[in-house]
Image 1 (cartoon, rainbow, N blue to C red):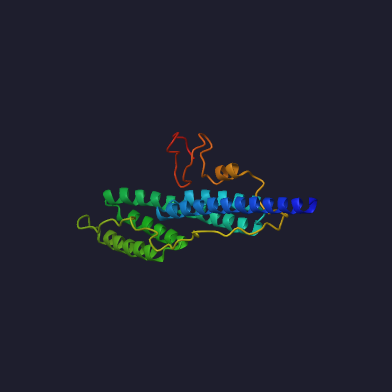
Image 2 (image 1 turned 60 degrees about the vertical axis):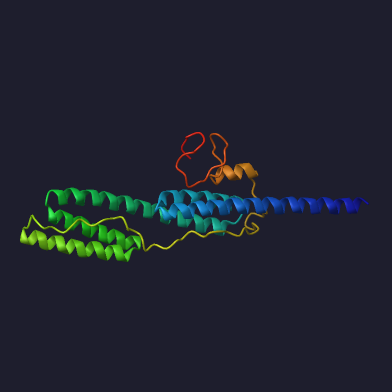
Length: 218
């Protein structure tokens, strides 16, 4: 009888661990969906933040390889965010130069944007700005101040970037540190993933900037 009771206890514990693993997997997949929404808005900083949270969680679960991949991807999105901010600053300078009919400056800034877009991986935008830069250089040579080409728009920038955020992830048993589940409690895991506001404790989506309930920064 004692042996039977022990077996039942083990089965019950296994079910609890399986249920907890399923809950954590659903939480991580929810965070990934939020990362996808942020990516569609070109909010690379938010994507990076969510990726770092997932990397932290995967590390805690013992899946060090997946944690490393998400951490590296987060760094890449951080760099994309830096490049995008630099491009926006160059656009502002180019716009001011255009208003002053300083076409050489417009061309110089467009060429810089073209180079950054190439690094960014958007070859279409890179070529577009290079072509526009050449037009403004011709305008500068002719010293024309009327009939100037319109300043190009950044509204479609990064349109060729494909989604790099998976829609789901399959949790694997942690073997690097002998873990089979997170050392964090489920609620702590939700906070770590940005699915619960650390200020008010309400459910939130990690792609938001502020908690809709208490107004604090997430």
